[in-house]
Length: 393
Image (tube, rainbow, N blue to C red; front, side):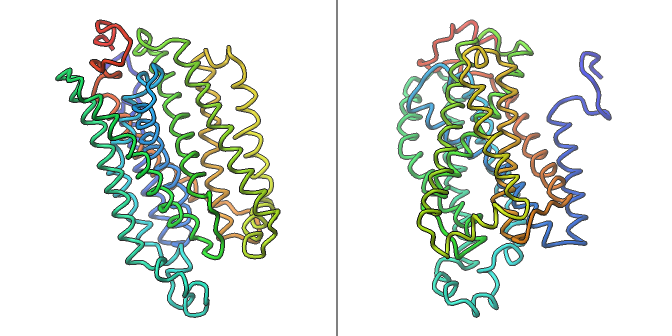
């Protein structure tokens, strides 16, 4: 056993530790499902949405980076690629949601559809065979995009073929369009249809932005940790973290703008079909969660990220990003749980068990992929780092 590493029940590496936590969380969650299956599926859905937001957000940021460039992107490019490569795992972890669709979705219950004219009108789209088919299509698109972007980048490390840069750029443009469409419909299927009488035209965009925000916060934390370890110290500097902090600030403001816009439009329209969605989330204790989101997901990060000095300190910036990450799970909990508990706030221990299970397993694979290749693209002609320094990372 390496004496330079601390041992944790015999597991030394972070991926091993995450895997232990993940497997334990999944086993505890499955045990809980035996006694309370409906709550298991609800808790699992929140945890799953939280976890899949990272690879999806990484995929979108990766394509954005290939389109716009910038040295900040090269510092986190391999982290984004590692996140995108975990999408096959998320496809596997989707199975409990597919199995529990009857428990989660009102439109999946024939007796509910028979008694509701509106659900009958939507049944051409909201039915289980089509629901499963769409999910397969979404994952196929995301996995192909993630694999191509990652494989071409790694191939360029070995071959130095500059044409691969153009290939990455040419794929990223239409890829972002396809990504936006598929994520929008996926979030309509998996989240918005929990309350099929309610709809929002910017719901998909809100999730696209939130996933990008969560993924950026995550890779900032990982990049800061690698910087502290010295593994990125020769490549990344205060300027890179300053740029990442500016991008995080932009996403925080956009998240707040979309959330407030949706709230104002629905509130001003005052339609009986739409108002109850917000009433369920601003009464019975849920309003405390809503206020916490306003303060910790927007106001506090916004104020702190205005400071130039804060954004140039990796550890401090990672602290801000950690708050954003925590509040992302709270945000998802606030979006999903009131659909089942309209009478007031409700929290179950399975919410944490499922989070540890899904999140731990995903984090284990993510960290393993980070170590699979060099931490930066070595031979991308757009990368301004000296070749000898990049080779040493």
